[in-house]
Amino acid sequence: MARRPHALVIGGSLGGLLAAGMLRAAGCEATVFERAADDLASRGAGLGTRDELFLVMERIGIAVDASIGVAVPERICLDPSGRVTHRMRLPQTMSAWARIYRLLKDVLPRERYRPGMALERVEQDARGVTAVFSGGARVTGDLLVGADGIRSTVRAQLLPQVQPRYAGYVAWRGMLEEREIPRDIHAQIFERYTFCLPEGEMMLSYPVPGRDDDTRPGRRGYNFVWYRPTEEREALARLCTDASGRCHGVAIAPPLIRPELIAQVRSEARALLAPQVAEVVARTAQPFFQAIFDLESPQVACGRVALLGDAAFVARPHVGMGVTKAALDAQCLGDSIIAAGGDLDAALARYDRERRHFGARIVAHARRLGAYLEAQLKRRGQREVSELEQRPERVMREIGSSAVDLREFASPRGAS
Image (cartoon, rainbow, N blue to C red):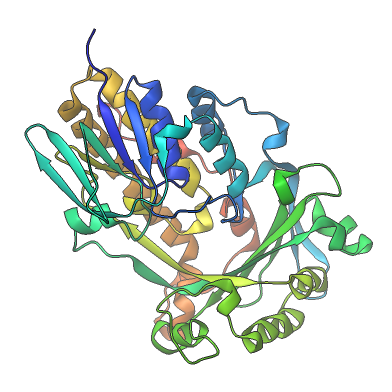
């Protein structure tokens, strides 16, 4: 009986777990190595789902049912007075990062997930590929998958010239427990995907699973994402500076965000957003923000190393499919290995062709959706027509929406 290829998966977040699951389904052994020593389930926030994600999860062996998330039947847009100006029926299931993470991790054998393993470098030769970790540990396999996110150590070694590109705005985020939302506000917005579109900005809010992934009424959460243009050199640096005066680069841990910045965000929410949504922001104990970047790689396979998920391409979150793209990457890698009859070199060549095309088009699409926000840092006379306004009908249909047909991003007919 032929030996099963052994894959080393670097990164134990959603992309790495999806990769490990699909590689196991394709007949490989797969071991996940995660830098963090703690469980990651407490991280992440709300996210949209797609049928394509669920199909990949089912192939991995996960039974997907209604408890995966919260069904949202329609979208509404509110003006600053709180009046509904637009309404669109667009059913979607909203879930949470932790909910998907736990399901994926639970189907992976415990011995195949190794936390506290920080990758230092990758070595390749004719016999395979070796991951070298901090402390000197070395693990050799037939294939290595870099699923270690936007700041990928694997990609930095293979493609050091590829760097994340700042989009010119940040996303303030937060989640409020359902029981903390006033009854009248709950009745107006909780069961809906709600948009507020103040000039130059964009606010989204929607229900998600609550504590312990609970999707029962009364135990859910309400998530918001507020996109706000922010100049990088000074404004972003100020946001990322803690009370002691230390700047943490382009990201800062939520507890270190200065209290006066939180107070300012709450005050500006009152001034700019519908009062129902501003109240959600005001009641959220720890709002936090993330700078928005995108990234695209000129290749996603090099020798016996494959890049997957955010390590390969990062599309701005407007497309609402970061996890789905990672799932489709994992599916393509597994299917390529099956189609190649175990010939890993041929499989990786096919994977590289197909996922480069898909990733590049998703990044371009997300940039178009975010062009209005990015353009706020330009003088009005320098903006293109598409950057001058955001039409609610288009924003509501395309932002984070499963209505966008993923087939338009697939490989051209005849590609293999």
